[in-house]
Amino acid sequence: MSFAYQDAFYFLGVSLTFIVAFLLFRSPVAHRATNRLLGITFFSMGWYNMIFLLTITGVYTKVYWLAGWGPSLGFLIAPCAYLYVRQTLSQKEGIGRRDWIHFLPFAIVFIDMIPFNVGLTHVDKATYVANAVRNYNEFYLQKISLIPLPVLFFLRPALSIVYLVFQWRIVIPAARRKLGRLYHWLLTLTSIQTVFYLAMTTLTVLGSRNGVGIYVVLKYQGLLYLLFALLISISIILLLYPDALYGLKEGWNPGSLRLGPKPLPVEKAVVEPKPVNERMIAQYLPIIEAYMQKEKPYLQSKWSIQDMAVATSIPLHNLSYIINQHYKMRYTDLMNQYRVEHAKALISGGAWKELSLEGLGKQSGFSNRTNFFLVFKKSTGLSPSEYLNQEKGLKLPGI
Image (tube, rainbow, N blue to C red; front, side, top):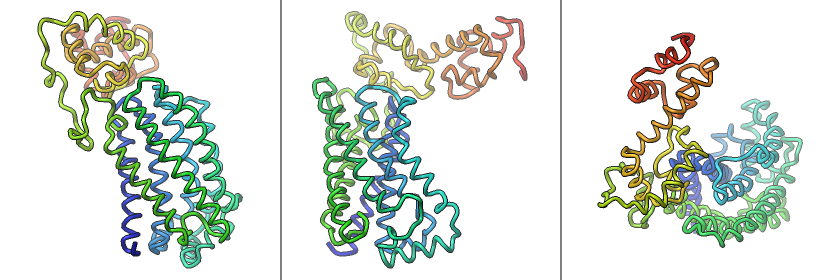
């Protein structure tokens, strides 16, 4: 592979990684906070490898201010990937308080690099980068933090292997659960991570013999190509895997994929069979009502019917059919009805003493004040302030 093609190959890997990270951060499905964990993983990998690309092309000297931000991001890759897999398998949103301990290595390295990132003048930083580009050993021989860079050089792959072991310990037993395509995606992700981390560890050991770091060990280009090939592969697989990006869709097939799709309104797409399928309603209605009562998904303003289908494991067309036939309304109207009832409960409970009307609306799952007022008045015949005056005989401050 010539130098030009090599750079293009590396650039493709970095670009795809950033694209996937962007899509994951904007994930429209259930567990969007969990998907952002994977987004952080991809962004960190993209940034880390972008620095390598800038270094070997010499462009780093023109964007020298980026120096110093990569070492800490490298400690987010393995923890965030592990938390993503764990939370996806447990079908939990985001992370708990105790899980923040997983970000402790990142925090330590980030704080340790602050004097270099913030304290150095532009001239000093530009000089450091220029010397490093001319001699790769300068990256690791200069003392720019309390923790020597060679130590970080070895800690990254060591930490990755530890998390990889724990990740396999939760992925393998999950094979007994009927998770379908989503499990296959998690298994694929973990398998590619395994090869990636092993290749990174190998480069670390080989690179230590020459005193240079993993991404500047150009002597071992075969392993570097493997790392970027894995980045490209996992990015493409995820782009072609709407189960992970957009949620499970009943009847999905690869030929119907559209990147970043905007689904048609389900109410228009579903052809309702006649007579009414009472058996289906009896089967799924208790699940829907129990989920609404326990999880209160209507408190999330962007919770879609696709999210509901994923969370309840009810086929999308069945869920839409039940809402239309049993509740005699559209999905959005059903969610707004729950939101109005929640807002009324907040007002009755005295929440208006601490919250503005806009705050009451957001606490109830409405996206903005205007939507809150319109839906509330349509449902009750009164505006929120009129309802409050009627209930309490008081007027909210500022109304």
